[in-house]
Length: 522
Ligand code: SGN
Ligand code: CA
Image (cartoon, rainbow, N blue to C red; front, side):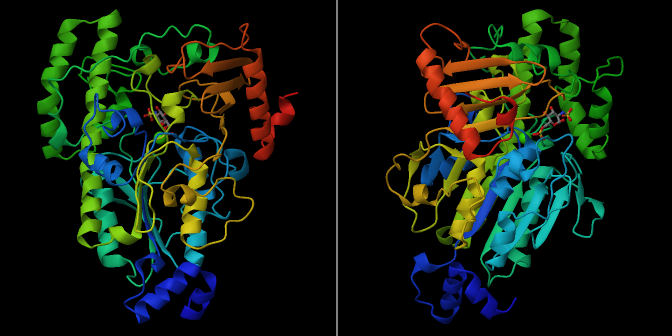
């Protein structure tokens, strides 16, 4: 692409051109870079800027302290591939065609925001987890892990479609590659969008050997609804994601011993066997006494469930620790290079996660912990918002936000809303979004969470579970923040049900979800 083409494709580039010829150009005219850091399954409860009771994430807190923290950021479909497809296209699953992790292949020929950014003169790169089955399109540089990726000595797929092994721990490797691209590979004349996509903190939560010792003497508080009996919530009863019953002692909690077996033992061993002798020695030295102690105690019932919970939180937090430090490395780099003033730094996850709430791990449900996703940003010069942002945003909003930032006109078929007005305004934007729409499809599948769709406003949530079930749920998030009391059909809820049905109907019409033909709302 020559400079003339660039000039006519983007207002942002126009400013880039004038910058090189006139050093005194005002900073707000500079094209804005984007550094987008996305983790996998990192939930807001496990970031101290959102919840200081359990986690300690000083580098993420730095972003929240100096920038903005969204307390109402949500996903449209709480599972990896679909969440990523929403991110790239700015459209709900029924429009981008990627409904679930198990049957879909992303149609990489469809428009995505990185492609629009490229047309506007941006250089684009993605490193790490991709999980869309087809190879990346719209990137000048990419290197991805196959499927979920491995924590130790992982495989990477290169742009030549070769698979190579990179020695080391995945969170460090993805950061190393990203920093190397920033420093040595990109074209410094162009604005850029760098996407750093971690596998951390995805199951099976294998910590870096350097962090294994952390949190061992801490006893974490149980969530208030750890012993949920799922009364009145049929789909929750049949889901297979309970820490007590479905978390694997060997695969998830590393209690492997020659005389023990479990459904996922073989999988665990395939991960363990990726380690080099030094990593294995450190791993064994740490885990062997815990394994011996565990099997000598013969725990059952609540004691076993709570022991599993404690190990789960510890493992998860250890993986968070290295993630947080690696985010710190990226922030330090941008600061040192004086790039923060013209770079939007975004930190988010592909969805939230259960940390023992309802007795669960995993995600998928429209309930709060997995409908939410953490979202914090460091804002470049010219964007005035600071502190907590309460406007409801959703992962379909990223694409239009980044496009508007790059000076690209947002096509009408994009369903998200640009967040730029929020970021530029010192005060909350009134009448931003009344309610948001959610639709989960991955069933029948692992964890057995039934298909469902629903709508959430700032107080209520209405959900319909369908397919081989037909149940409705209604929650008042103000009086029942843990969603333990489904009030659907109870006397006194008629008006609120009617209002929420209308919101659901409007959302399905607005986003043109064909499910409304099957289950029309009258
Ligand atoms: C894997 C995990 C599941 C998890 C899905 C989806 N099982 O299949 O526990 O729900 O990924 O996660 S595992 O035995 O392979 O670890 S997602 O974040 O990629 O959508
Ligand atoms: Ca995920």
